[in-house]
Image (cartoon, rainbow, N blue to C red; front, side, top):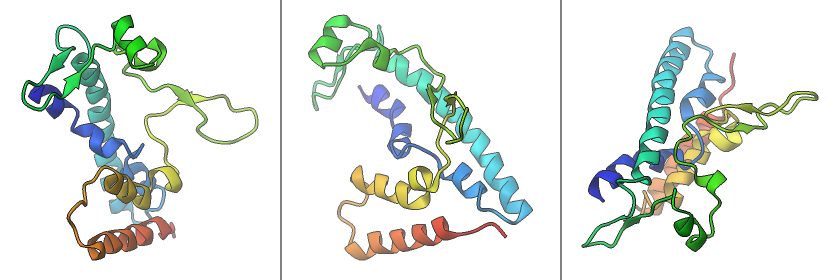
Length: 165
């Protein structure tokens, strides 16, 4: 269970649905800043696909069905129809060998079909405020003063409001 938990740490940030790098790249005016954002973003994309692959392994045999004896944390076998029925899940939604993103509505323009993207790049879904709020929803800021969260939101709002010159 410890190894499986470690493998899922990446999802903590990804539960917000995106990465800040592609969202911020759309706002960058300075060529060097853009180069940094695009370079780091590419590595993140690689990490994301590797994580998807490893996460699928953590909930497949022989690793699946592991329960930590101390914490009772369980990683169910998402390839087992009985597990899916018990958890009210559909195989299509939990297919563990999928490492490619699913087609989605990416750009709202007439005639464009859904396409596969790893992360949305809208400020609403992938901006700094969305990221800070996802961290808060996960409990990352538990125990911090309200002033800490307020400052994080203030900085995130400034980042989201940045405009390309």
